[in-house]
Amino acid sequence: MLLSDTPPIQIMFRTSQVIKERLLQNTHEFAEKKEPVVVVPVLERLEFYAVGALWAVLALFQLIAFWFWNAKKYFARKKRDKPAPNCLTDSSLGTHSYIKLKGAKLHYVEAGDRNQPLMICLHGFLDCWIGWRFQIPTMAQNFRIVAVDLKGYGDSEKPLSRGKYEIEQVVEELAEFITAVAADRKDQKCVLVGHDVGALVGWFLVYSHPELISRFVSISCPHPNVFWNLLESTALFNKKMVQQSQFPEIMERCLMLNDLAIIDSVHSHVQAHPNSGVVSKETYKFVFSRKMDWTGALNYYRTLWKARINPELVGKLDVPLLLIVGDREQSFSLETAIRSTELEPKLVVRVVNGAGHAPHQEAVPQVNKLLLTFLAVTDSQPGFRISAMKSSIVEPEQNGIVNRMIGALNSTYSFGNQMLEQVTRKKDPLALPYRTRGCNTQLAPR
Image: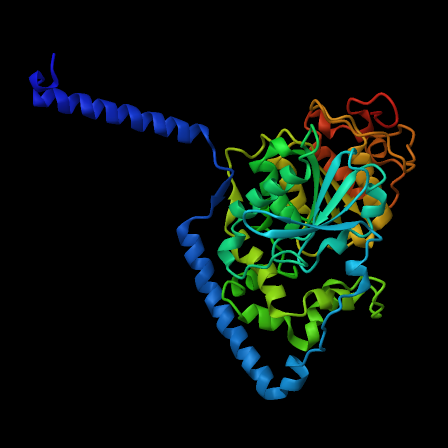
């Protein structure tokens, strides 16, 4: 039968049926593909921006008052021109390299045997690759460790537009970076370690590309879905400051007051004397000496606050997870860490005694041992096995659940671990002591 012989009503009926079928097909395909990132509701965003505008106006009046009161005191800055401090440019810790991606050019420092498992390290706010200076020599004995300057930081490209820092774009660039760095390997999985903002980005990367991550270690950064809701007012970048930073220029000017005095507070654990051969507070002041150095860093807070992990994906990660926090942490409470384990049953939390927001720099031996212990286990995923660690790790006798877990790590905050142990077990193999997870010897052999 020719189409011309078909009644118009029947043609319209068939056309509508085809359209419905295609719409249903597209709907099913969209439903099966669950986007890892969701944003907070529009009303919540509008409220956030409205409150931020008020804080920004108050900050602007404060800057004006400082200018009229004593401009020389508040706005004067020491001139910090090139050359850069030696510790930022020498190759004693590793080889400096650059890679051009579709979105930006990234700088990274690499150390260790290229045949060893790959470890990617993402630094935190007001930091750069040098923040991993205490981990690079130790981890390079067993890993090919790569400490990268996030986009907007250090020697990496610093686009000024906040749109360049949307979490979806940052995650895809890092996934491209991992693929490029691991191009010469059969197994392109990596161990991902992040601190602060780097760990926050890392959480989204793990959910977006679990095929690239063998294990994930988050330092001082709980799960993103509880991080923003339970952010302490005592945090360096609390909710008020994040709201205020939504408006350009103002927060940059505020953080650069008094010759970058904020650096002295954030890096209070770093020595003060300006020795160009040693990492000091002056090193970080050089790194953040220009306004553009702050804009890139702040752009993460201008975009990340509205991003959450898709609730339909939460709790389904098949990647071993470790959260390391200091017992003197002021950015979030222990409750936030416990809430994170409720979202991801495979997450193990360890509290480091005597450490604040940067335990990997403040309590180096304890954190390095935690990292080595967590990674010294044969991974259940095929094609990835960590070799026996060259660094000596003392194994304790089995005299209790927590003691079997952390053994001779006496500096770990015992009380917090006992409580967190009960939360994280939940009949999951990864909630058992590290050295008993599919490992019959002290350390898993290659």
